[in-house]
Image 1 (cartoon, chains in turn yellow, green):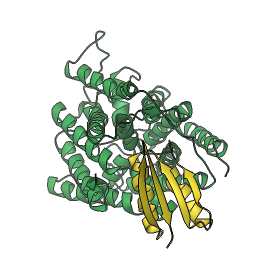
Image 2 (cartoon, rainbow over the protein chains, first blue to last red):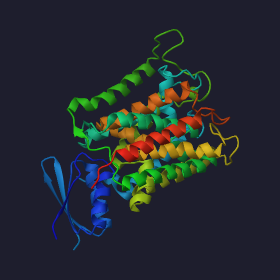
Image 3 (spheres, chains in turn cyan, red):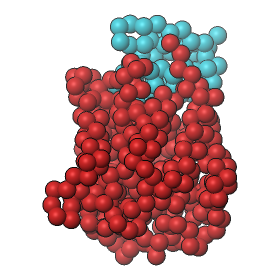
Image 4 (spheres, rainbow over the protein chains, first blue to last red):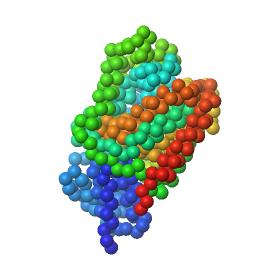
Amino acid sequence: MTTKRIDARGLSCPQPVVLVDRAVKEGNTDLEITVDNEVSRENVLRMAARRGLKTDVRQEGRDTIIRATRA
Amino acid sequence: MGNILSSRTGIVVVGALIGIGAAVLQYLGNPANMGICVACMERDIAGALGLHRADVVQYLRPEIMGFVLGAFIAALIAREYKPRGGSAPLIRFFLGMFAMIGALVFLGCPWRALLRLAGGDGNAIIGLLGLIAGIFIGIQFLKRGYSLGRSYSQKPASGWVMPALMAGLFLLLVFQVSFSPGGPIFFSQKGPGSQHAPIWISLAAGLMIGGLAQRSRFCTMGAFRDVMLIRDFHLVSGVAALVIFAFAMNLILGQFNPGFAGQPISHTDHLWNFLGMTLSGLAFVLAGGCPGRQLFLSGEGDMDAGIFVLGMIIGAAVAHNFVLASSPKGVTDFAPAAVILGFVFCAAVGLTQRDRG
């Protein structure tokens, strides 16, 4: 399964979470979401947890990359 | 670096403090069931500046200034101050205008709707149902790819504009500046504009709420939106805490008066109580935040939120100059047309501003 990449930089609530939700509904189980602010980071992590996805977070400069996978 | 205020417990505590704070502000002088009302208070500021001449609603409300400045300070401390902008600002300006027009037809923003409920005003139930309906409509656009597009990083100084404006307004208030005999700056001698808590208490409350709300991401629109859009009850738990604690405080302070008729700064025209808030709710969804949240975001450096706030202030001026704003006697003759125009605008925005795929 290829990684579904979501660029949510510059997007504000609820866009990042809407994109993640849509990707999960389309059957993706391996997501890589890039956000650039704390609110988006919190919202995406909360959404991922509720959808049963494991998350791995790393920083790349000002951006936060969240890898969310269904085990 | 954890942010405990953005946890479930954190936002519940914040909601509780806001509810208590609002009830206390009312007790100390703010108008009845209006300890905090972002729409009414921005309208009062518009009046104080002479942008409208409804002489019962003119006062530079420090709560609004505190919201922006408190959020600004909190964001700086937490390193979340991030000047950004460029996401369809002109559209956001008009969304702000129509959000305000809708709110003034109902006589309150979502914050006041919740506080009116906590004060026993049954008409607020209708307004909140309308708000939920408007948010529901907005969600349909969100699900079909609606987006005003991304914002872009701006220079650090750009984010100082709104805080500086708010500080300037506060100075105009404190020094009771008069530019002309009689005003501006106008200070209502009667009516809701003449009812206010002591300036420094209002400012302190605004600063506290601004800081707490910025950290906890408190948003009265997002609360209902997230329940319907993604079955998330995080934000709504903060809103529930606001209502419960405001209600409890109102009981303690003798400010709870249940009923529909004769409620303070309220009318019983249920159709327009509903539709006014439907328009507001829809506009807040399309703009990404309730009016409080837009103030907190503008303090963080979000210039798109700042433009929405200015749109609300101008919208208040339009509402009073063009006789759109309601009174306790009910809605005006022009209000329905304005609300319908607002729906047309919001629908056009919702349908045309889409990313496909």
